[in-house]
Image (cartoon, rainbow, N blue to C red; front, side):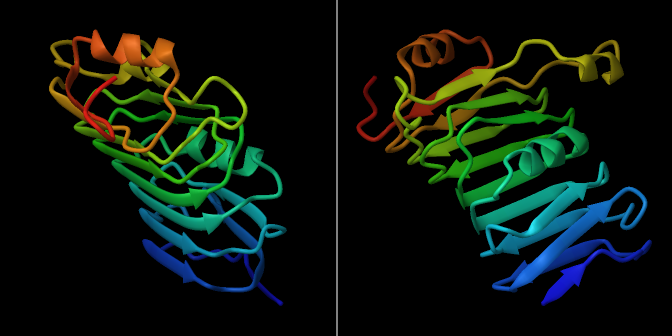
Length: 196
């Protein structure tokens, strides 16, 4: 059994691919300078604690955490996130993103995710692909208009506009479609057949 929970103050990039790991702890105390994390195919029962505010780039593939709060805590802490990509990150509740630096967000094949909420004043692209919303009326995709992090923006900051959204093969809730279509920050919305 392999575990990773050691102090590496200078660690900036970590890729763990197809590793049979029992514990992954990356925290402010252990790895405060970690900016890039790529994990693929971690065991479901992995003791996963990733809470590092310096993270700018997160990529997760083929992971079904035993406890969804692991992912929730990671995203709450990652307030400097610039880019997030996932493929088959299996969570059922909500993926909540909040970063004043986030520009690119891709959630692909999170089959049962109920909600994707985003605070990202610099957002350029948002992809929610092949997400079905489980047994609900579809996945809710919400672009937040306000957040506590807004207070940290410069007074004259202008929110990004012309955000490109792709929801190919996703079951997006009707209420989310209505809001996204009429949102002043949204540019192009791409769906499977470009109709909604």
